[in-house]
Every structure is written in structure tokens, then in C-alpha cells.
Length: 314
Ligand code: NAD
Image (cartoon, rainbow, N blue to C red; front, side, top):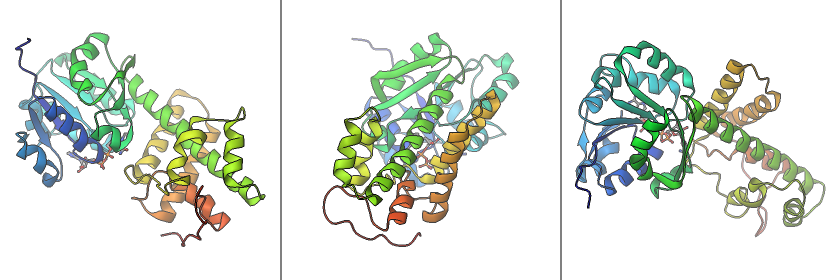
């Protein structure tokens, strides 16, 4: 039996994702130091033995490695920089893993500014929604040096599916892979909504249309599996807010701009998502762009039961 004590993990950002991830770290036995803008978000963890810290600097000072799980690059910068930030508390040579969906710029700037401190910085964004965070089955895409990835793997394995924790390249590669996955998935969503609404408006039965698509070269995991969230359950996934989906699409386009690749289709998809956000509100689920097409059709697209009229945009 290995008696080496587990490292203390500092965790900043206890929202939809961070709350499940920290519960799994705690269940795996990692001592935790946690922080969030909302202190109440830590109540359950603290009751389970985690230590609360008022600032990100204090988190970094009191832990062996720091994890951030924050909404946007700006939030990551806020948590990292300034007198109360991670950089003010982390020891030279310390490890910081940013698991937020973000772009490389913030961490790159920090890496350059702290080059003489030997910090080990990894980007490790995730897929798998809040459900995957809650049940410890996230897919994790890690950018950084191989030795660092292996060193922190036990921590990542407490939050993700060991088979799907992928070292995808050097610094920034994790952010890029995650953004490209979201971009393609959101593009599938809009394409599928257009096709189903058009086919149904043309008089084809929804179930027949979907089965025909599945049997064709146009099949996709979205048509076969993910769209069922809406068609079978009327669930537009409020666990991931459309405001964050729009953020991801904006970051994806920022990334394409920074590397000089024109992305006409991605830009259109972003506009459809922004229209859905404007129509249904920031907290609406990430799949609500589908509702725009249902609204055009004047009915919900459902595989079972009568299609009901849907209300006006919120
Ligand atoms: P969330 O908005 O639910 O939670 C973010 C938390 O960060 C909040 O509790 C907020 O109070 C806290 N916070 C913000 N700024 C802070 C600061 N400076 N210091 C301390 N705490 C701060 O967001 P989420 O859904 O948990 O998403 C987090 C990240 O994970 C985002 O980048 C998102 O794109 C990504 N992501 C989310 C999902 C999902 O399904 N929700 C899936 C994959 C990836």
C-alpha cells in the first residue's frame, strides 16, 4: 500500500462544473482548499472537510497545485493576476491547471511574465457537461509538457474518465481542441435544426426523416444521439447556459482569426446562437437555437405525442 499523502488541491470556481469536480476530488481523498465569488457554493465541500479561502492567492499559498474552472478568459485573468491572484500566492515551480474553456492568450501572457519562476502551467478543458462533472466521467484535453501531464494525472483521473484524459499537445493545444469540438457540435446542432424543420415543413414525418438521415451518408452522432435530448425529452440542456455557448463560439472565432483561417460557416453558426440568446435569455440551455426553427415551424419537434405550439420568445 502506498502511504504517500495525496497533494492538497486548490480549486477556484465552484459553479455547474466545479461543484461536481470538487465533490469527486473530495471523494477520492484529496484535501481541498476552495474559493468562489459566491461563498455559499462551498458550503457542502466545507462540511465535508474542505478549507475555504477568501482569495485566489490564499488558495495558491495553501495548496500543492491550483485548478481554475471559470467562465471566460477574463475571469481566469481576474483570478490569476493582481495582489489577490494565484500568481501572488503560488510558490515558484508551482503547478496551475486551467480547466476553463478559454483561449491561450491569458496563460501565454502569464507564462511570459513569469518565465523566471518555473511555474508549471497546463490547460485542461473538459467535455461531458455538468452530468459528466458530477459523475466523474469528464473527457479532458490537456495541453502542456508530457512530464507535467503524467504528474497531475491522478488528480485529473478523480474528475474524468481515465480512458478519455488525452494529452493533445503543447501549451494551448487543450484549449484549441476543446474549442474545435464545441464549434463542430454547435454547427451540427444548427445544421440538424435546419434540416429537420425544412423536411417536416415539406410534409415528411419527423421520425421517418430522422431514420432516413441515420441510414444515409449524412448521418452524425448529433442526428443519431444528441438531438434526442430535444426530440424525445424536450430538454435544451440548461446545465450549459447559452451565454457560455456564445462565449465559446466567440473564442473559437478569435482563435481562427489569430491563426489566419477564415471561418465563414462558424461565423454564421455564432450569429444563430446569438439570436437564440437574445430571444430566450442568457440562462437558456445551449440547445435553444433549435427552438428558433421550431418557432418558425409553429410547433415543437417531438418524436412522441402531439406537437404543441410553443410560446413567444422570452
Ligand atoms: P458557472 O458560471 O456555472 O460557474 C463559474 C463559477 O466561477 C461561479 O460559481 C462563479 O461565482 C465563479 N467565479 C467567477 N469568477 C470568479 C473569480 N474571479 N474568482 C472565483 N470564482 C469566480 O460556469 P460552469 O458552467 O461551471 O463553466 C465553467 C467553465 O467550464 C466554462 O469555461 C465553461 O465554458 C466550461 N464548461 C462548461 C460545461 C457545462 O456543461 N456547464 C461543459 C464543459 C465546459
